[in-house]
Length: 176
Image 1 (cartoon, rainbow, N blue to C red):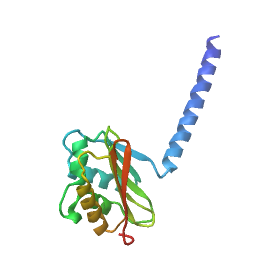
Image 2 (image 1 turned 90 degrees about the vertical axis):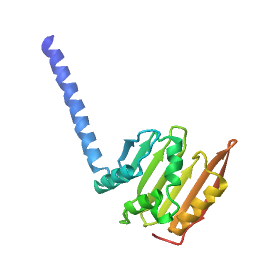
Image 3 (image 1 turned 60 degrees about the vertical axis):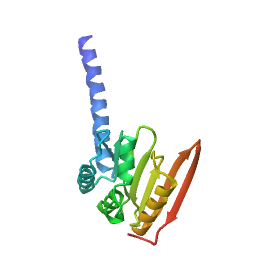
Image 4 (image 1 turned 180 degrees about the vertical axis):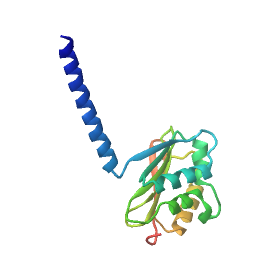
């Protein structure tokens, strides 16, 4: 009886280990593995985020997500600079290489708000700002104009208002 249990346990272990090695092989050959990094709430360190993104891109990661970002931090992230070229969104876009591989960086708040910068496989940059608290129509217009000046090919700015979402879309002038 003891040896029968041992044989069954050995068979189950070999099945699990075989499946685990197959899973490891699948993960090693799958190029789009999202990496989730935590961000301390209430004070976003844009430089640290940029360094994390640069490191992950250098390692070949295509989808990078920061979760649990405080709403005030998302707003500060979007409104980081009056100089469009120095904004964190522009600096994130510059970190995503134009090499025929689609890559994205997403900062997501617990309340469903978020910011995403994406480099499409054709080299164009896209930005999405969704439900970030405190962004007035005037600020959204300013953000759209700044990103358009930086040649973002698609800019989606979404703001929730009494269960209606207003969308401002813009098309740029081609690859960045």
